[in-house]
Image (cartoon, rainbow, N blue to C red; front, side, top):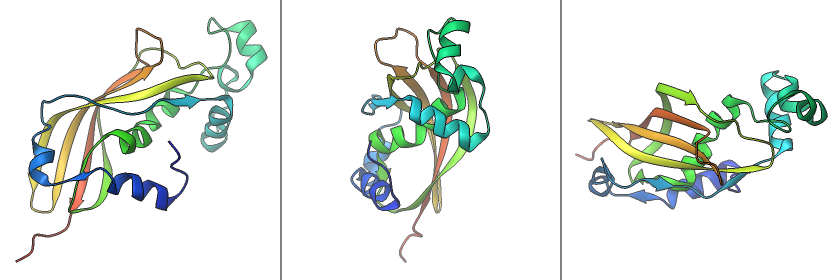
Length: 170
């Protein structure tokens, strides 16, 4: 993924910009799929520190192996959910006149399968709704975080994003 700075994130977003008519054409079309990302123990530990959620199933590999059915630690569900943004940066198009993107929210989120430390995940996104306003686009996505080699995904969500656009030229 390599999105470790503002510059890297903005470069990734700029590389995927398309004209508005091309963006519109993705409605009810094919899914966009990101590259795989490894969810390692260091990522899980960093998330635990940031959120103050140090439940042993996430941060104590020996205890998690001995006391859970998972065979080791698992990622927080909210960590998996938070990966939607960088996975989207890798997969989704944006509109050329976008000033900034905003996470507008979720209609539905379901955590279906835990992500074990060391597993790889990727995002799969399908545009299912588009609301155009004068200076914004609200886009609804069917979003899935898949686990490499697993039949059941980590999560599914109905995710809504908002793109704030440059005002039209007069």
